[in-house]
Image (cartoon, rainbow, N blue to C red; front, side, top):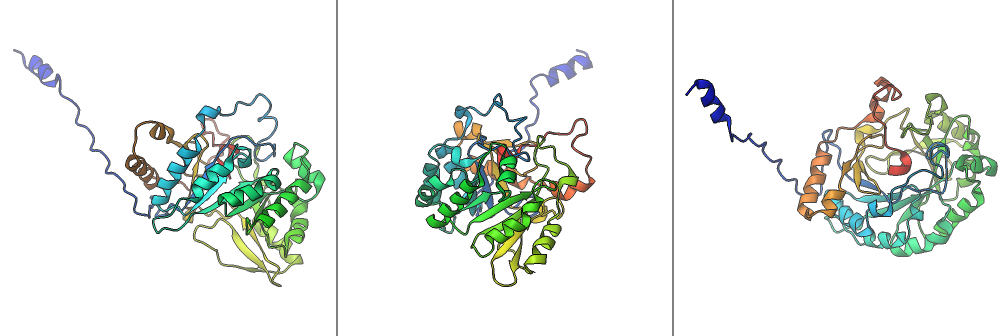
Length: 372
């Protein structure tokens, strides 16, 4: 028998050595990523549909009548969402924000709110349950949402001038109905209410001061958000970004401002108080003053993909685990491994990266799909 033949026989049936299985990650109430950032906030998109066509999010030329939305069978059920939320809470999530698309388009959303409101942290505390909406359906939904257990709402509103607002939402929706929704939310006790204004240079920057004047002294916290390069359909350009520092300068020139401390670790907004006690504003500066270093947020898409950054191009599909035979311990461990492997810090690296228009660049997830 030749030595060559002996070698071949010896190789037959020799199974490759299996890689050791990763140890299970148990829920301890504290879960850290590779940059030692804890997981404390979960944003859940309940629909990829919206009734507005804002140019910075769902431009009409892309999201037209032929656009293919996710089929209903692909969406996570309320029970699947609640199960995941419960497991996330065991890892340290204390705040859940429902988003979309426009979350109030999801039928019977108050049923999901009631289920989530029943969840508790490992310390036995209820979760901080919030919702972001364009306000179009808020007047008719506010009471039911509060009764179901929603704590508060954030309303997106990009200007008070009706012509400007109708042009930005691109469906001719009147600003008066959004303002009525804010008043209904206040009456229902969904507060403190926050109003988010995306500022796009050359489009609505003239609305900064009218917005500040309107909401000053109202108890509503107005926040100005820099126009961001989320997704690939909004035609983002740096020269359309109005830096938050300029927003603060403009508001402060009419109403003197004093800086405030962050209300919680990982807060996205820098807070400023009116010096005369008329309330506060906030600025979210993802472009000019990145806050990746203490980002504690994960995002769950409407069909069950987990994204670890607003500017991500890929998510982790949890639906096979939910709809397979995985038990809670296995899903809990999977969530732990995903977060422990996280090192995302897109905004901090933006300035040194090759522009995403380069060939081969990964297409980032759209804001309308994953929420803001």
